[in-house]
Amino acid sequence: MPDVSLIVSFYNRVDYLRLVVAGLKRQSFQDFEVIVADDGSTREAVREIEKLSAAVPFEMMHVWQEDHGFRKNKILNKAITVAAGNYLIFIDGDCIPHKEFVREHYSNKAPKTCLTGRRVDLSESLTSQLTPQKIEEGYLETHIISLIIDSIFGKTFDAEQGFYFRSQFLRRIINRKRRGILGSNFSLHKADMLSINGFDERYEEPGIGEDTDIQYRLELSGVRMKSLNNIAIQYHLYHEPQKRSGKNLELYSEVTARKQFFTPFGIEKSAY
Image (cartoon, rainbow, N blue to C red; front, top):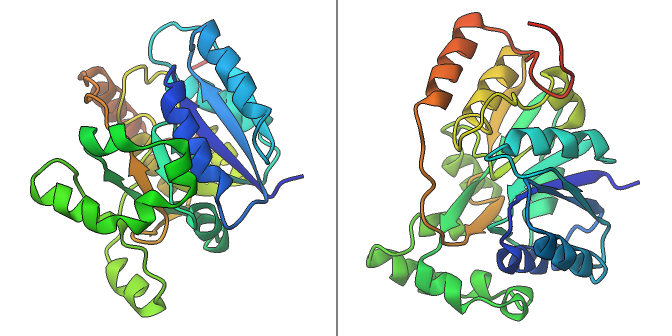
């Protein structure tokens, strides 16, 4: 059984998933399974995922639900229930991992600790140049100067997050300030996620539900946050920003008012 279950949230962008999988194929740490948490993609996309799963060197599972709008938290909970690993890493299907990404999450794990990383937001131009072959050859890691230049012109953002620090001294310096959870780049023991009953499925809009709410409830349960800036690195593929509504904010206000870390609207459902 794998030590790590890497859960990839996904919706229709098979072209992006191919790039993510190319990044996973070159990981320095390979004792993991991949679970594609699919929030209602088309049949055509599902067929392409099946082809992709048959051509990778690791176990790749696909869990799917019908498309009834944005229900990312619900499919993530389904992925958690089928995960074989005792340690969970969450990424999005548009975030390419650095070669050391999985190893750093796994080697830095600790009891009652949630590891939080960051990502480089690639420009539309840089994203369009990427191919699975380039990713497998380490293109993004060897072209950090291109990312910096692109960021100077305001196209790529947070390029400084792409510098991978091996020095323990630099890691301590850069991570003195605690960072919150980013939904596309965090990890923790499966037991800690189950202790809060996973994601709150009432969040049916992007934002807050897959990160801010999770952090709040984890910390209430006694789990501490640990930053992996410039250690667990991702490269976020370009897409138009998702629209946000006030519904999630209203719901989050309700959650914080109740100060209850175990949600009745998560993996296990109960009357409320």
